[in-house]
Length: 474
Image (cartoon, rainbow, N blue to C red):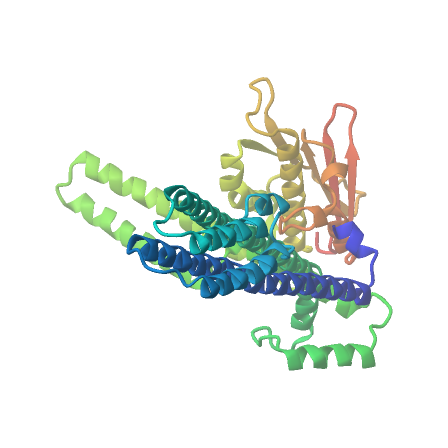
């Protein structure tokens, strides 16, 4: 769907969706009108059948009552009523809605003529009335009444079935229309509306200000009046890229943590230490003291983790405000990824040739790129090892730092992992992870003279080499 829509213009997409929706709605209106007219027609048909049955039943009962009371039949008047029944009968038989097999079992003109002839025979006969003539007339009346009753029940069920079937078809068509319209709206919202709203938010001076129709129209007009200039990289753009890159990763790592949380953690740590100091002067048992010490250790871990996370965000935009030793840098990295790696059973090995070597140049930026590279290796490992990891193999990431040689003007960090090839996971647009891919990291390092190389060794190991130029003070 995405590849198909990417080849169509917005005008054609909107026209296609609009025409499709209108056509489907016209089809629904057509079926709704057809159901209404069919309902009216069926209603008239059932009423005619019911009226015919009622009228004939009245004639039948009148004849029976007159004969039982030995009265005189008003044959001319009865014949007129039978003739009116014949006109109604013809109207029903000519209806195209009634199937032909139903008409075969319906009364005909011959049945009415037989009743008329039987009535005349009774009128012309001399008293007393012949029992055979009465039996013939009674049988004819019962037969016609039985046919009318059966036809009325049959046509009632048939019309109900027709209306119910059309109603089900209409409901099914409405369901299809609703589903198609929902898919259209979802497609428009996902591939058209969301990018437009995202662009309007990036162009809005206030990030909290909602995007309205007026602001959307104004933004589009501004874009039309002031087209985007060529993508020429400037120092200001590089600094903005650094800031956005850092804040994107910070949002994933911190998740709403702030300095206030660090202060609270340090306060709890101080209170626990005070309780431990007081417990030395009181008669607490060994188990209570052990629990206090365990509590102190866990709180210290939490405080250290928060300190590392805050320290990770404390570098300036130029990345030169923080000075750390190599050991502190990699220990901070280990602390930040420890929880995630532990849950995913990933071993992180760190090898340092000189842990005391001091880093004074773009420390925050180097830490940020190393974390992105580690996350890239983590993705490669999870891509290769899906489910349970075999006992003979382990998911491993190795970080190595060698002290720069005397004639070297840069430091290098090597990252090795035994995951899938990075070429399979290099496209950051195909994943929801917040970390940038290695192409972005490479461009990011180039803004201050660094380099990044990705290779695949012969033993199916990924190698990432990050190099950063030394400052003059190193």
